[in-house]
Length: 87
Image 1 (cartoon, rainbow, N blue to C red):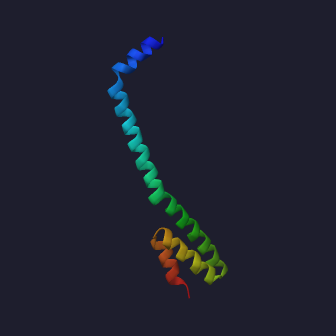
Image 2 (image 1 turned 90 degrees about the horizontal axis):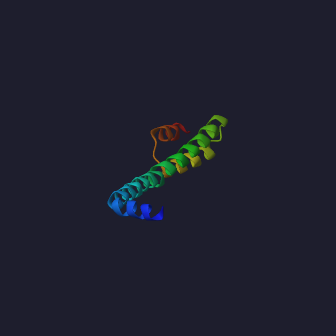
Image 3 (image 1 turned 90 degrees about the vertical axis):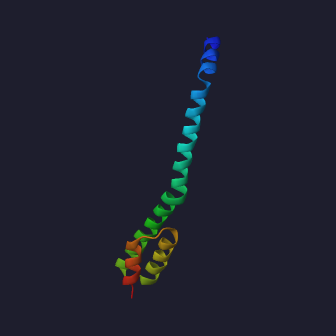
């Protein structure tokens, strides 16, 4: 059984290597997207939601701080518009 596996791996070495390289590239692109876009966007949205709740409660200082944090992670027009509405 191990002999057949050894022969198979020897014959398909190039294809296995190509598949492994493609897998590494896809994983790298996905992790890069998460690191540079996905995680900062999620943090910004969480701060925006917190700011909106503070805005509805009338806590404008906390709202302004949360919006500034949101915009520092990822710029969104909705966060900027809410920041512009603050007195």
